[in-house]
Image (cartoon, rainbow, N blue to C red):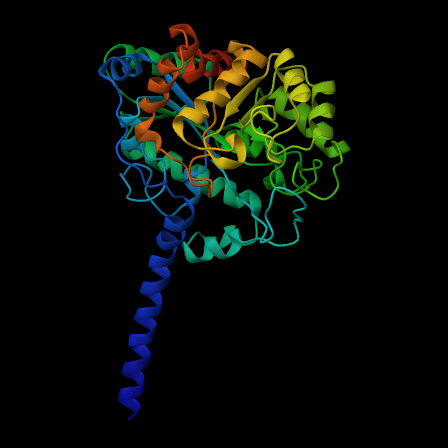
Length: 388
């Protein structure tokens, strides 16, 4: 009987381990969905035009999930093969380090965290279980390891010179994809200004100030306080600017946006959002405040999910882009998908030619298409990143 019990116990352990191994994939498959659709009919001229573009996406949370970014996956929205299929020149990889259980667009507290369990289930190192900074460093390490494994296919971008080198390679007929590291909020600083330097040294060149909850820097658009920058938040913005780290105001409260614009000496981005005049969603800040961001030289990344654009169909995303161009100016609009960010979308990164096709159908000029699809983002980053 003892042997039978031991044997049964061993089987249960094996089953438990197998279940835990499968759980991350099952979870991601449920939340990083692509709405089922027939293959998009993209006209040959749109396909040809898309192939001529330098495409940039300002926000994807791919590094959070338990898959190799170099391998084509059957779940999620972004990996290197699909980036190549979509003719993406540069992908910003933003890292998520804390997500409250009560995450919602209005009234989210920061009192809980589901990433702790996700880190354990995905077998992240134990140092990440109770440290948001270590979670950011670990996810950066995933991108560094991917670059080391495929140096001709993936190039981490840290400087303006890196962008120039990337474009030169692509102009010579090679197809490497650039990757730029960003944070989804600055709670990984853990209240310590010196951690900005640590993240910079790990390759981070864009930093959000808040995510779905208020933190040490200030209020979130979705948080409880509605407050602006704290003293620590002001010091953090100044330190980011000193290091030529791009400040990202996605998810920031209106007061934080206003306070940041008052002290910033460099343009900022809102990496993934919609425009409230095009989609009256609590995810989007008021148009007038968005205009202040762009009047100061800032860049706005338009997302592809319902909370940002109300309808995620490609033609509707393009309508939101049209509104943004007309209101903010063509030089200030970019793509900010929020791919792999626990949002369902109507197309993944391999299908990005459908946006070019819909822009052509909507009468966009070639110059507008080139700027929105990546030209504006490349110009902005070349101006704002360290020169190298």
